[in-house]
Length: 292
Image (cartoon, rainbow, N blue to C red; front, side):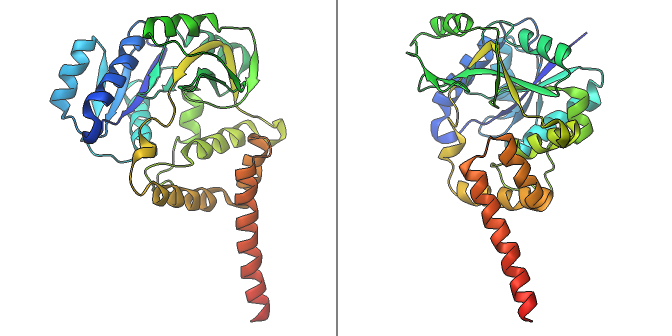
């Protein structure tokens, strides 16, 4: 029985096709070293399904391909993967969200699944090592190895029996909980990127009940390399997509939701700014109505 299925929006840019494919090759070759590497891929650009299937076959990756090679955005691609898994594998227990700019040690998900089983949490992340050598969410730094095999050994040596508050990608969800909250609501998240994680975190917080003061956590028994923002921040007009999703997040959850994100992220300066921005807009509308 399959316990976990991985979801991946595969975004290969025409302008950097070879380097993106090299990065994706490192990611999927490392994933293949795990016992469970079944993956649902949403093809978001550059390669045809036929080309992508040949590439996957060369990696010996068991994968299902969705999409049409168009960049529909993160939320829409992820949601398509979720809905496929819910329909085709209704009994799968866990769904991961992985990225193309990651490198995974063998069976990286095992400590995370064990944590979810014993804790009852709806989701959990590993620690990540970034391209700058930062250990997130610890805000510590190490020297980054150059060789991929040495990098994997380093990730394995970082393992420690600890849980930290925080949220990073990759993330593993209890599939039943993810389905109950509905995943990403693309009626609100119409931009190609921005705030999709925060939308999902709010869904999880409401599922757990705000009285529990639930916050996302990282299980530091597992570590994954994640370059972070390796591709999508290079896209033109990204500020337009962020603005669309910011507005969508507010329409979906309101000021109350922004307040909850402040609590989730530990009084984040950015979400304090958003809170004050939308409160000011609301008060401005009320002032105008009062004058009328």
